[in-house]
Amino acid sequence: MAAYERAQRATECPVKPEWFSLPYDEKTNMSWFHYEYACQFYSQIEDSRSKTVRRWSKRHSDEKIAEFCAYYSKRMQPCIYEIVEGRSATLSCKVGYVRDLCHDNSRQENSELTEAAQQAMSELLDDCNDCPDQCLSEPGAYCGHFDA
Image (cartoon, rainbow, N blue to C red):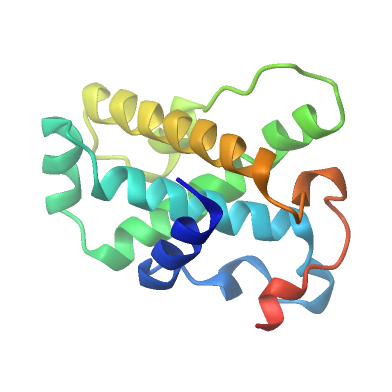
């Protein structure tokens, strides 16, 4: 998905940028990346063709799904830093992060939500290659997108 299309979807996404930037010093490129990831993950769940994921999402409100995506995105921060800092060449989404928040899920639900998280990350990283902002090249820099 092109950056413009992603931005359009983000305006429709119930994930809120302020969930990632409450104090001024958290208005960083990395925080914005995690916001974008949460929105991408939300879209991945919303557009899923998996019967398991669709059944799971029907049991939760849009806000609860958005909160789950934001939570998961924030939990992925150490994994992202490993990539950014060159300590790892691969990024893998963690099923334990799903399990930690969604105690009533089946194994299948946890597995398929983790796969959706991985797909969302792959799509976002592909989009990031074409983005002029390059958030991950200066993750600690101030990000003006939160002020828009």
